Length: 424
Figure 1 (cartoon, one colour):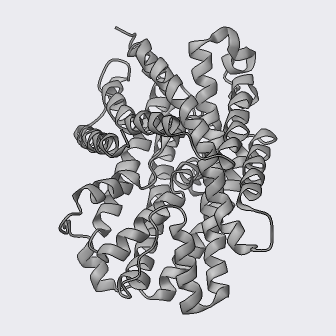
Figure 2 (cartoon, helix red, strand yellow):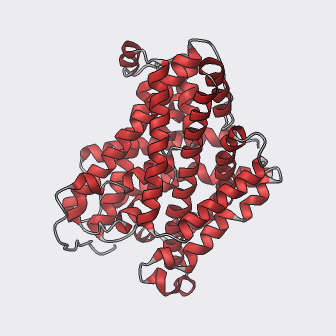
């Protein structure tokens, strides 16, 4: 049995808390990438506002997961990797295999998603591959030469652009307020169960949810006295995300559903949406949307490059301390060798996938491992925050237990479905 965790003391946080909001927006903006834009837009185009409730529930689940991660870090003074390690070495090995495979495939996916809107904005410019390489290299530079404080400011700029573009377009196409209100009542159209579960689970949900505690620490929030600040930060971030995904559903419902226009389900679906905007409102509006598309995609690049590299640095410090270097062992992960090594891993090896078709074996492995991460996160947090590893006063209440358990079951269902859909 691991020792009962204790908490540390720190000076009282400042009273003007609104000015300190940041880590939550970073994790939310990182999680909401091109895939979430497409998923919510397609939901609006297929079902109108009927599944609006599912997008809202998805945001609430991510609030609970991020809050639980931040609460673990602040109440125990230990990282999530510390917590997993107390559950057995299998957690460390599973995470190590997952983060290496995931990083290779995600690196190419993120660079490609950032390149798509740039190719459309500059049709006479470089190819998609060149734009992808430039996007990955730019993300590397942003993280390599800056610490968290600057990375957060860069992310806030891209998040602001993304938010303004999408909300402005939603207002322009004109939301049906009465239909939106009706869409908040849980309803399942025929044949929509699996799609609805995917919408709930996918809104802002990635490995970067596990990075939230590291960003909280990098912000300087290190003890339980910062708990109210962390919770405010988290709620504001996902309230913003909620407005954002609702706006995307408005665009899908009003622009596509009413006109019975279908778009592609992959990242290229956003290019289809740009063409629809061009036909209805003109090229300026379409370009405006493509800028928001790039902001959403590139903010995910920066967020993953920074946040998941922090996770990897902590993983190496636990699994192979002799290889971690003094910086990682001392807690200075941003300057550590594993942090920089993973940055390079995210950037350069995946560039090969921009030139070659993704090997089917790698895609299958990625799909199987990746589908297990969100239930792994939800269920391990449920365990860690209900045992002696967490101080008694900061363990889960009934609501946190209910949400974490429900989200764990939801993600397990999605995991099984994703495995069934793989090309065996």
